[in-house]
Image (cartoon, rainbow, N blue to C red; front, side, top):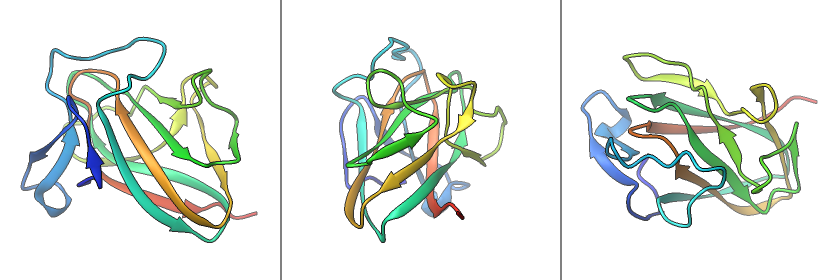
Length: 146
């Protein structure tokens, strides 16, 4: 989960059990559960999509906290929707002591898995910190079957 760009307090950590031995997250004690994502503490990843509807899964290991903010810049539609900020509040990430996959779901929409409609081209996926120590190892963006 080494980001193209990352701003503090989000940072990269080492873990031999993480993919490539690295993951992103924040230190415990600096969580921000406010109703809007912060302007800092954002990891950005660039990718190219053919256009269509996609979902995101993150390989995670919650520590003290179990949530992050997620969005794709340039998305034309989020189903079932986003937080009023335009980000997905990905809360209630499945707990576990080991790395595991969890589909990005919206805690503002009864934890429904979010599908995202994208035009063809280059996009930026952003992950912003929310709660203490939520750890993200890998990202999987997959097309949703019609």
